[in-house]
Length: 459
Image (cartoon, rainbow, N blue to C red):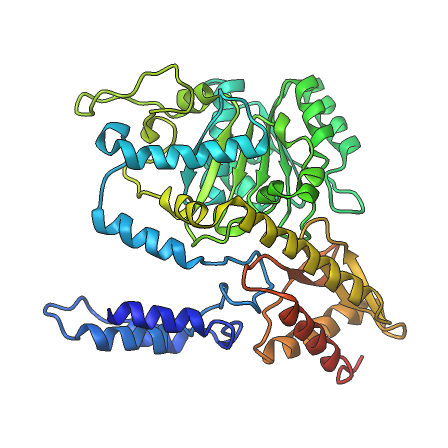
């Protein structure tokens, strides 16, 4: 009960807690650094006090309403309850027969996601630890399906704005650096289709084997959404596996505006989603969806004499073993993190929240667009946009330092947490709205802080 009380108080105070820790963490690290205790030295209450009073404050408040940096993670309290249940009963779900009901809950969640993106009944999905592992598995599936064991000359195409884990995952999957082709982006930070087609043609002419095209449905830098419909057409014509990294933007598919922006995602071969972003669940909840379930199984299947009989069924995404469809044999029961809040609140609640985030980002963008000397560097395509302060009399070579100083002053207020990036060498400040706790009042406060810190800047 002591833990429950402390958690309830912590969650209730998220809005008043600092938006993000600004120190380097060395002090708390020194408090923790110690040899393995031979005997128990602390009581539970003192440990909780240490964790809540010393450790937790030394972190980004990513679940708070003022967290508008990177991609926020909502941390729905329901997911904590789901995790408590899952850890408490401690049932194994890597093989369906070991816990059929629990495994089926997770299968059902993945099936909801497949229907959401417009996949056929032959599709399936698995829940993962996050987008990085999902993208890794997707690349392995594409490599196996398109190239088999001979993939030395394979080529992967992704934009310069794609998440860095795409390149990292391709390397882990055994592809050389020379197999990775980074496509240019257009003025809206979407993949440049002309450059893509030129690269594919040039690679074929020199004997390479183009096999994978990765589109982005909401980049981290600017929230850009590639032209997924056109990309799907190019992929089909060129016989490429078309994967969509929709870790950030995929769940906007629940909204009408999101469906319009993500048009073409239904034509992909695989999709990465992150419920710990767009569905506000706790960190460690990702998903990979594959149009044809058999492709996912073939890339990951392995057998052993000590394993129980696996499920063999023609029922589509019913009754299958996660260990046959992903890299993990030992895995936690992740499905309840999504299933429980949907059972309690339904899809409408999530749809309304996501629509509100689109509205808030558009509102903040429109307000900032009216400010003198404020330059929008990337307009919101979903719920993220980027900007910088650009006084008319300030030389270009001073602007990066100027905006870095501005961001530092904004962050020192501890009410909002914003992050920066470089867009074509220009220091840009980002606003990303994706927490279910963020509403109009905190966006207005953010705008006020931005304005109040402007006059003190000296160019």
